[in-house]
Length: 204
Length: 220
Image (cartoon, rainbow over all chains, first blue to last red; front, side, top):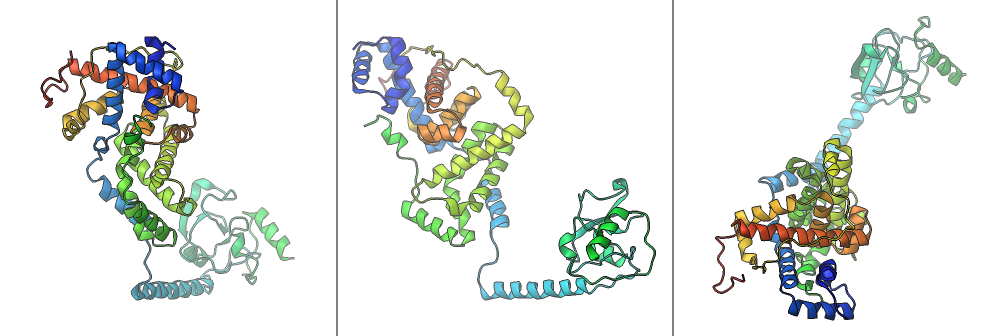
């Protein structure tokens, strides 16, 4: 088998990868012995591969490792099982449990804005919620059932409860159902009437 | 045996058993060992992200995201795979996703030649004067090599970096980039020949002229 230069260039990469059948391989070896040009291409290509394959070619921007370590540590490492770690964790649990109890026992300072409303149960007191002016419900931010979105106000669940807002039936569903009904004696207002009808239906 | 086997099959694999031990411990919950596990591969992971994104800040952020993803999926890592390859594949995937999100980089693709099936004819036939590996100790040499690499079209650069710098095999390179093994081979050939030409013309422009060569090695 005899190969010409074009054929050699096409296969030179495979030659270096040893990805050729024996016949072609020996034909190319024969060609390299007689063709100075192709030998130069072969030597150069092999040199290119060796140079770029060297670990010294990899350079990192300064501070890369430090930033990587910090990011990984921040996001992956939690306190390990030392006794102080457990103590911290236990203390945190007590605090969380306490604040949850506190939250669930929060009595609105104001009467509930709707007579059908449920005040919700075990809503995390520091949960960020959204209310709008003139409405009676508080929502998880982004809830599709927020009226007057341009008049949104963000506050914590604890504050919303204190101001007499009640949880939205749609987005706060998991905090409903189990709470007792508190009737505040005010008349149902017009806003949010659809949801309140649903609350009423659910309570029947 | 392949002429390249020494180069290709011998990437730095820092302590096989130690690495396996670290992986097992991280998988069992010793999370603070994770950075130690990936640290030997930072450079390679960064090079892979740079090959795709060509922007230092994006590449660095992508590396961090990719390592966090690797951490989140560490339970899925199988001992029979190479950990370095696994990390690089996650990084490439992350970088490709970022590039798809980033419209500005897409512009680059428009300037690319699409005739990858066409044959590439080497331009420079002067006898090749070997650049010794020791030359890589010099910053300007590394700089020249990096510039030549950056001059390649994206599709050639990506394949070359994954195969010849990251030492993924042809199949792994194809999977990482979502292309066929035939495309990998075609692009790889072209990338290698183009780099050789670029570096050969660099010779003529005196890029490497101050390198310490042995007497008598002047081939032309």
